[in-house]
Image (cartoon, rainbow over all chains, first blue to last red; front, side):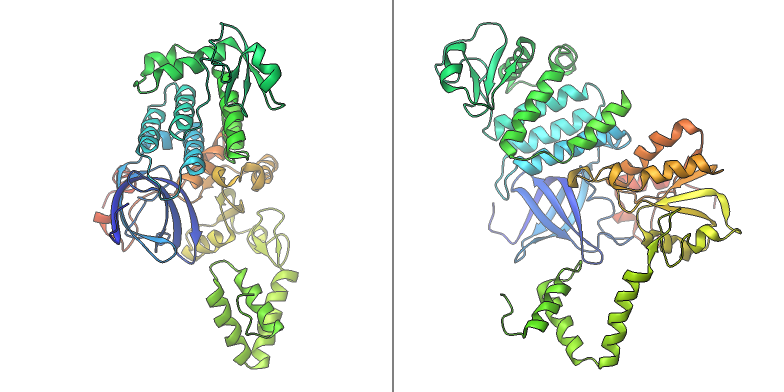
Length: 258
Length: 201
């Protein structure tokens, strides 16, 4: 973080909260400063200089000045508003879910450029409207990776022995898969079974970290998607120590769509 | 206690004011000391106005607008177009639309907006009563006048998904440049919609 009073940065708008007559507190995930909450004054007034630039999920270039308690948004210009995503209810729910994850895992004023980059990449993938469930899982997996919470899927997390190709026990307290002989010693009540299909997708994700996946990979993994989805959600709930609020609406619109 | 200098009733009033939206501790203190200096009669008027809002105001059982009598005056007005319902987020939106004097249909107040990040879903809004209302009436057009932001749009899209199979016409107010605004400050989404929805001079 620079010591200047005003900083300019690229950012994604995560959420908004009305405050006072015409202001809003905007939570950004910025590339250079991490998570920032700043007041946008007059933004609720028609004809405000901000226009629609501070809409949730917009990728923006913004200028923010430091305040005593909260920072202030000076200027905001839209780089990408992900127009296709905004016209699809399920994609909106998915985008908001991603924003909530970043709001939960992103740290205040502590930059994590890798997190910013995967957030932006995922919003672009959602905007293309194809294979969205896969892109969300890929985002969740990398979110765990860049925030330092990625569990071990290849070897037993305790004895480091390699695991054979079968269903295995995952223990969130141990932070990975336990081999059959370690389960008895280190397994806790919070552990659960992960199928060989889900493990294969999770290991594929682990091997692909640092690789740019395309729609070919996204379309070739129908097996295990549902289980990996519930695996990642349960594990993230364990880390966040609470339910994510946006999952209820996401599940509702996905159900109504199917 | 932060403001230990005040007498207990003063502190209590400061605390009560601090609960109001947009009122911080300093403003609450200022309002309280203003009330202390206020003539007693004026203070009583204020207190009775607050109480009467709480005791006499209710929600209209049809449109959920705030009203003194149920159904509200708008729902009772037979000169209004009964075939149109304008769906809005808050009672204040009804007042804003009424000021324009250009809309003569009925309203339906949702009392909020779907806000997944705050855990507010359709069941927390007056969505089910709207669907019920559509079944029992001869409405031919629904105007989705939620705020033109992501959560407002999501709410409209969700209700649209529910109503679409009924064949009722669903419209929404035009998006475009605000009167008195500057073109250069308009974002790409607003400007794009404004150009798409352009009209003959």
